[in-house]
Length: 358
Image (tube, rainbow, N blue to C red; front, side, top):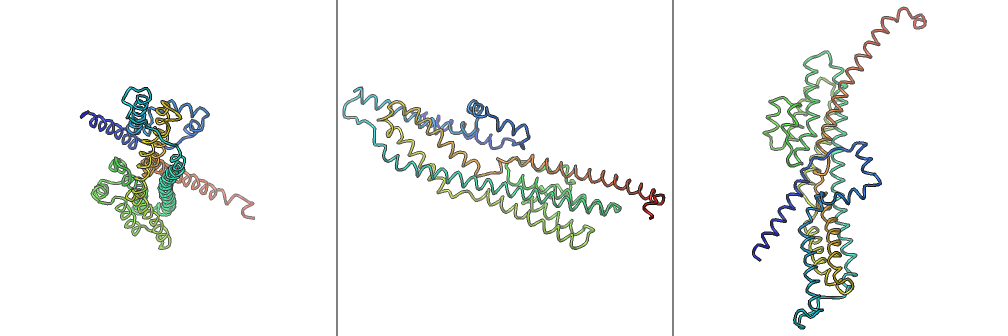
């Protein structure tokens, strides 16, 4: 009997390890092939067959096992009372289902509100990141147009290129700020020089350090004051993204709400076999298993998406943004060269074109 708590703790530790391993799992952006599989008509069968590999389901092994075992023990006890295997003074454990009929809507509403609140945080985090990505793309476009105007000055072009690298670095720094296990040194080593990278690594707030690099480099940018103010105004979106992300990861849904949901579910499933015994007898065992697996899964999903940044493919999103900006720079250079050649060609042909002179 003394080993039972140790067994329960080991099962709980295993379930937590499975859950945390799933949290740290790399997420990828969806491709057309992923969407095809996602909406496939065979998805229901695939989801059922892969249930044992689901971290949500595996993480619920301890509570579901406990409640199912309790239902089996209670069924065995009631059977012993009915068949007189034990003295008659032991009471039969059964009760009316009326209390459950009255409280079932309350449990349903509690789970819905809890999950909806978590999904709201997920959407808020995703919107904050989409805003940051859009701002980075917009600033990169403005800087590329600036790069074209200062192409003749080597020092000025280097300043614009450094500023562009700082802008691309911000999403990586923010991602490493909100996602545990990220390696910011690996993410930024190809974007920043060694001195800048050391400063960022030694700073306590790395996203704000990147913003400081951007602000000081903007002061060196050889552009008119109006364009500089436009670029500086974009930084407000970066500050807003930092604020939203930090609020989400530091302020959970009110703990009393989470605890109430958990306690309600536990009490519900501890008394469920007693309520169902008169109508189901030994069927209370699979009924308790199905109920616990279903309702605790809903509650578990709400807890997981409450911290949304591990659920988003932020690393792939940052890499996609970087690759698209690099590709845009190369394309801009090729188009500029091609248009320049066309312009030179037109200049050479212009004196011989009678229609132009007329």
